[in-house]
Length: 309
Image 1 (cartoon, rainbow, N blue to C red):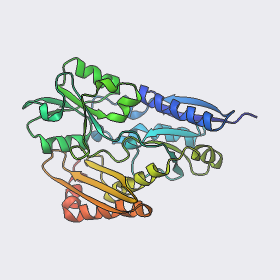
Image 2 (image 1 turned 30 degrees about the vertical axis):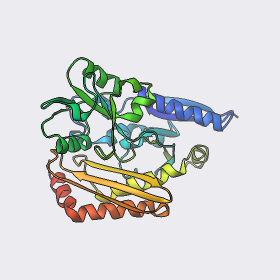
Image 3 (image 1 turned 120 degrees about the horizontal axis):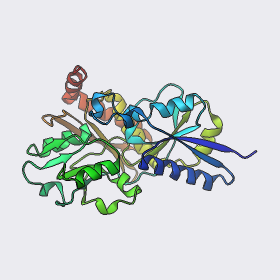
Image 4 (image 1 turned 30 degrees about the horizontal axis):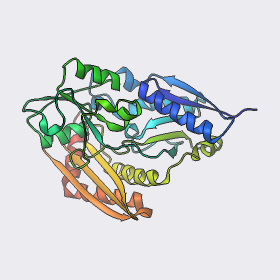
């Protein structure tokens, strides 16, 4: 009997691209395997009139996909790892991660080439508290406006003149063949990426040995190491959806460098630090970096943000 796998995915063009990409890799790796997509509309896709932080955070994009796996309607789900909370539900695991694409933010504008070129009072669109925090800290003169919707919707709003510039993940634009829309790439020093940005992850049930075996063949070890450090950093912080948090790990020879940032949404406070160590201690490095930031004052800030209704 022919082996088959069903992939739960959001219906957005980017999510479908990612699911189809994983499906193609699986069928190439396992000849004869049949892969079927199970598209869904998640709560995060339905609520577009409010900031994500106000309605439950990024986990809204994956809950329905996880329910489908628990109920046996799909064997796996494909995620942008920046949308995945630091802790997975009991009974689920990250079976594999693909090689990381460009982790940087992209500056998108029809009139300006970079953030530094934006005039005083320019309107910049982003739905990310992480980006808002770093933008407001560096350029308090800018007018930061909420921007929700899929990639095509956000670009349309820019083209309609609602914004002077918008900030999107470079990886998503490149995956959709929209490289030409990128005016410039924002250096990580200017906008530290979200934890897991640029990484496609594959989630499945922990007790599904067959799916774990099939999917595990796609694992990219170096990306997993970086992701382990970043997600351990986020987990140790125990931030809420109201907390601007950024974390990025990279290799430098046989050393792993991890940078982390915690800030206030209005950019008035920013705590940032970096740590380095052996690649075999990725999670420990991330956790240690978070502890340093908490002790430096981020703990008090996060407590205050968690207390906000």
